[in-house]
Every structure is written in structure tokens, then in C-alpha cells.
Amino acid sequence: MASSSGSVALAEKLQGLNGLFAIHKKKGPTSADVLNLLKANLLKEAGIKQHPMKRKKQVLKLGHGGTLDSAASGVLVVGIGKGTKMLGGMLSCSKIYTTIGEFGKATDTFDALGTVTDVQSYDHITKDDLETTLKKFTGNIMQTPPIYSALKQNGQRLSCLVKKGEAVEAKPARPVVVFGLSVQDYNPPLFTLNVECGSGFYVRSLVNDLGKELSSCAHVKELIRTKQGPFTLDEHALQEEKWTISEIVKAVESCVQLVPSEAALKKLKINYQDDTEQVKEAA
Image (cartoon, rainbow, N blue to C red; front, top):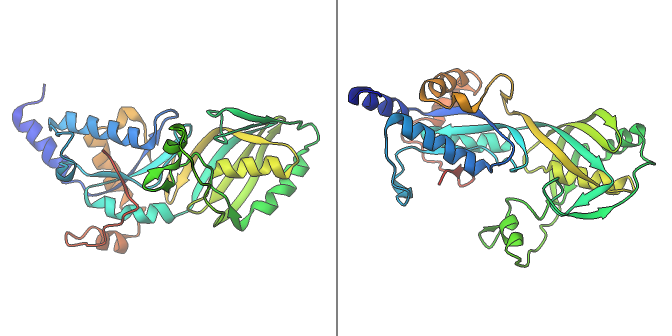
């Protein structure tokens, strides 16, 4: 067991951290669940007790730079301390995903967790057909977000409202940007895509729309975010066994080189006032 002085030192080190780092989110939990688990682990290691009801007086401030679906895995960028004020840039930066889609079945959530809503033939779809159709979804396009999403209606997430059986209005199509789309593998009914896109883009909607465009239907079976901004899954994302204070200290220090130094210094000033509302804080 750590000594009293050792616990104090750990607590001070943790509470003095300001910056960004990346973790590997596993498939299953929500992004908020993962952030809460990370926070609980760090507070426990530092010997800090946090009253769950005192949200406004959090002793450790954490936030993430963009939600990953519970069915998805991969890079989740985390801001700690004043670093949470830098997360707006992570929300707007480009992201890269690898997704496995399945032709022939559509679901209400556009992924494998949902209920099958349609079954159609896919035998007529060739790899050339798929590659040709991808061109229609590249560049500046309009995309309709899925009903099951983190977007809100009257202050509540659409996905939560749908699960409660409440009426939900579909959000209108909105402009998004796709920098690149390519077929990595094609073994019908399965196909693997590499997707590089901007903010606000839904891979689930892309796969659903592809199915319709090819006179069939489709849903996402697997989704992995391999890069967000400068953070990559292989190089920067900490696995759960490394969610320790010492590992995060090293990760925060090393990531300073990934973020533009001048911008980072400005964002980390004590008197920095731009408190973006887009950051998702842990409960």
C-alpha cells in the first residue's frame, strides 16, 4: 500500500496534469462509460475520494473529443485539466475509420446491435459496383444522421428518446466532408472500407446509404476508429492496463509534440476563457 506522502504526491501529480492523450476504447461501453471508468481508476490510484453529487466541484476534470458508438472501438482522445479546453479542435479534425459492412440486411440502428428491418438480395453487387458507388459519397456531400445517435432533441439524445418509445424527428441532411473512401476487402455479403472524413460524419449512415444506392440494403458489423487528428490507434492509444497516472503523465508529455505548440500554449494558459460547450465531461 502506498504511504501517505506517496498518495499525496500522486494526487498532486494527477491534479497538476493539463493536456491531451489518447486511449483505446473497447467495443461495448459508451464513450461516457469509458471516461468514467478511466476517472475512477485514476482517483483510486491517487487515493482521492470524489463525491458523485458534487459535479461542479470535480477534483479531476476529464473530457473526450468526440463520441464513439458503444458498438465501435478505437482511438478516443481525452483532455485532462485545462486540456479539456483543447478538445474543440479534436471534434473538428479529420478522422480515419475501418469498417466492415454487410449487404443484404438493414437494421434500425444501422449497425449489428439493432433490429433487422429489411432483408434484400445482394448477389448482383460486384466489387466494381461498390468502388464506383463510393465516388458518389466522396468530397463535400449531404448526409442524414441516424435516428440512433448522440444528437439531441429538447436536450435529450435521440437514441435515448427512441429507446423510451418517444416520438423522434429525424434530423435534416447536413453538409459533411469525406476526404477518402476505399475498398479494403470484398467477400459478399461482407465488405471492408477505409474511411477518412471530417466532423459530424456517420459511418453507419454511409453504409446504410450504400446499400440503398446499390439496390439492396446494408449495416455496419464492425467499426474501428484508427486515427483522430494526430493521434493513431497503434502509436498513441493507451490500452486499459496502462490507464495509470505514470503512463498518462508520459502520454500527455509526448503528445505536446503532436499538437501545434503555439496553439497548445495559448489553450493551456490559466486565464484561458474560451470554455467550449462541445466538450463531453465525465459524470
